[in-house]
Length: 362
Image 1 (cartoon, helix red, strand yellow):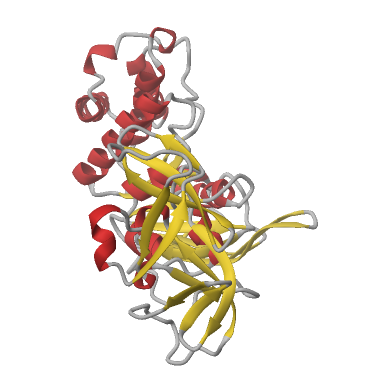
Image 2 (cartoon, rainbow, N blue to C red):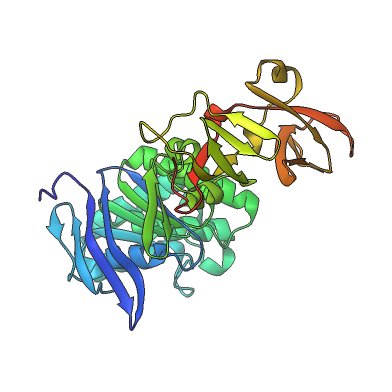
């Protein structure tokens, strides 16, 4: 096994608290300079995995390699990592500069090198005017920058972020998300980032690992995960609003439910031949065709508008398809009324088809 090809490698990792297994035989290879996001709902094991990489939790079994070195039993300070937590964990009695230099001074680093690193981090994070302030005089966003700076001055190859933006309001989260992306572009270090926010994951990641119950359900680029989810869980988790699902049958090359029949022409099946079976089809609200483009849609149908949710640039429209609630995303300027009959189009090539029993993509 050659571990030098990867920045971080997780091999057959288990972690249990008593009888409760939190991570299950988990394997993950992270490339040098990659921005990898661990995404999932609360309790899925994403922060636990990050803490194992950091050395804050001891795995029950398995190995962790960083830059080819087995660090499974090494102390956090010996792993060559910098970590940014959800809580800023700043020393309130120290200035920003004091917080940035604390770890370096404890490591007895030469004063000139400390000043050089602090100046570089402050410039990158645009916190130079804040160096003599104390954390109590900073906004949430400024504190988060300082917390990132404390990791940055360590000059390490791997940065770990544990939900660093979750305590901030929506606008500040969006602003700092852009800054973190710029930071990665500038440094080209490996970054592993934990979040439950799919927008953060999709915008930041080179690859996303979607987790559930201590397992990785899918590992891929944002484009792969959005367009070709490997199972119904991933399909439902990614996308806002979430995907529409209809239970039906796959018969003679078409999805059938009641009087709705969608020939799956152009759909890329995972296997060469797919037997007739009970299935679930998933269609994203933004992939439903409306307006002038309906004329060219592979499948057309009538649907009555039941509810309209204006969202500014978009409008979410609720209708029924085959008797089931069904969401459509249309342009925010589209004029619609409740109980109006709408002609919609569906392209089965952009849908996702799952076996009903296993929930795996067909």
